[in-house]
Amino acid sequence: MESSANPLYRCSSCRNPLALVQDLLSTNYIAKSGKAYMFQHAMNVVLGPKYDKQLMTGRFSIADIFCSKCGEELGWKYVEAYDIKNRFKEGKFILEEIKMFQQY
Image (cartoon, rainbow, N blue to C red):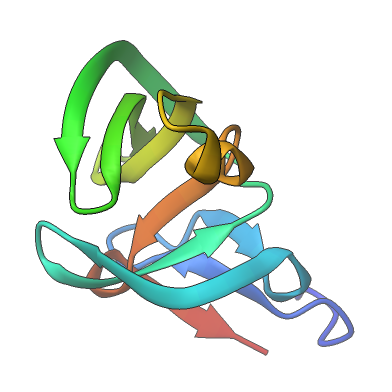
């Protein structure tokens, strides 16, 4: 059993660890399924090909992310921001709330 000293988020489909609670940056994002969270790092994810997309806050180059264990689409990674005010998002991960659960 994992130590409760490092609470984390897991894939709701297969329980694969996805992100540490300490890497959570914001819970104020919206994705396809609704509420989403921004993380500094994500683990056990596979990146899809990058592509450009117009999001609510501007145009970005993003890559969809998938669970490395079950293949569930979880959200996306910001690869590049085309607007300087959004550059802080580059390299960050957005995980959909409905696709994960928090374990202490």
